[in-house]
Length: 337
Image (cartoon, rainbow, N blue to C red):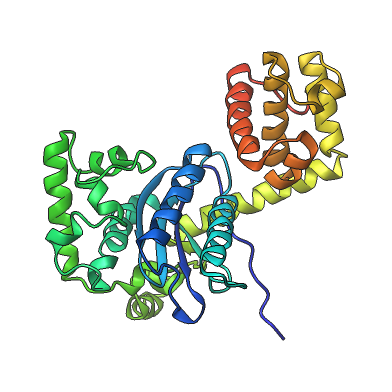
C-alpha cells in the first residue's frame, strides 16, 4: 500500500529549511542565466509576501533556502517560485515536463538551536560541491547568501541584519565573527544531521538516540521537524489546535459567506462593496480583514480567495498582512461575544 503523504507543517513566523532537487539529480541550473532567472523570481515573491530569507544557495542540481513564514504560507511561496521558474526553463530550452524531483522537502526548524547552524550549512554548500575552490572565492560567489552577509554583494530581500546581529551589534565585527564561524564549519564535513527532521537528527544521531533509550528517556520525533522533543510536541500541539479551531468554525456554520457578513457589519458596507475591487480606504481594509480571517480561521488558500475577490495571490497575501495588523490594532473579533 503506498505511503500516505503527511501534511506540511507551517505557522506564522515558523523557520523552514527548504530543499529542491532535480529529477534524477539532473541539472536545474545549466548556466548563470538560469540562476539569475531564479533569483529574480525568488526576490520578487519574497518581497511581495514579506517573507524573510536568512540563507540560500543555488547549486547545479539542487537548491537550499532558509525562510521564515511571512504573509503567505511557505507552500504558496515555493509553488509560485518553482512553477514560474519551470515554465521559464522549459520555454528557454524547448522542453516539456517536470524539472524538480517529487515534492520539495521543507523542514520546520527550532530557531534557537538551529538557525545559525543552518545558515552555515547552507552557505558552505558551494564549497562542498566544488563550485568554488576556497573560502575566499565563496566570499564573492554570486549565487549564495554568504557573499551578501560578507558585504560583497547586495540582495535587499535577504535579512542580513538578523543573522549578523546574532554575532555583534557592530557590522564590521559581526562580519569578522560570522566569517570565523563559517571557516570552522569547513572541518565539520557534510552535516547530514541538518538536512532533514526526525528524532535521530534532532537528538544528534542514532548513537545518541540509543544512549537516551538505555537511560529510559523517550523523545518525540517527526520527520517534518528539526528540534528537540519539547519543540516537536509544541509544534504538533499547535498544529492540532489550529486544525481543531478550523473544524469548530466550520461546525458552527462559519464559511466565507459568514465571514463576509461579519466584515460587512463591522465596516458598514454591502456584500458587493466588499467583493468588488476598490481603492477606497474603508473597502480596502474590509477586504484585507476578510482575507486574514478566511486564511487564518477557515484555512482557505490564497488561490481560493483570489477567485472570490478578483485579486492575484500576491495581492491576497499582502491584504492578509494588512488585515492581521488592523484586527490586532482594533481588537476585532470574528465571533461576537
